[in-house]
Image (cartoon, rainbow, N blue to C red):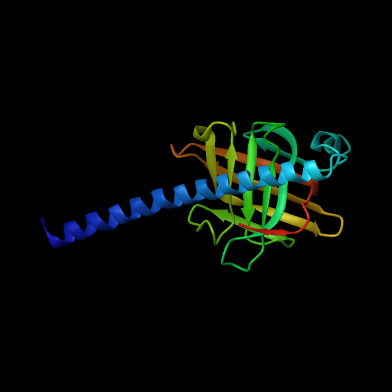
Length: 200
């Protein structure tokens, strides 16, 4: 075999390993945020039993997240809207996860900032450096997971006094088979921002 052939082969092998590794890191980060959110949600409910449920909030027009997947409307609520930092980083991020207990079709996104602005997604982003997100057609089935490959989240309000986030979003998501979904008309209406900033 020629040296150039071996070099080319090793280069493509390296790229393949990098893609597989990044997908595993993304899945790990998603699971970590969801797990942490679960534990924090249980603690919050235990400490404040008088707190209204997300269902009650949604009926009053608060903590509503709605969007369309290939034209099919989904209306749910925010399950975890929280500011956080990655370990060994100082930049504050924001996680927005819809309530998978209320609606199995779930969105989970990590924005690389916690201020009003436009957060862009692409399929070349590095998980702990760029905004990234996923859509799950059934949050209990990892096979139904789609990663955001283009589009944006526009956060219009982040009120840390009244704990409210407002915004809109439109993204394209792709699964490991290369199948795509269009997520459009996304709205976050008085999303319930959890107080404080946690470290992951």
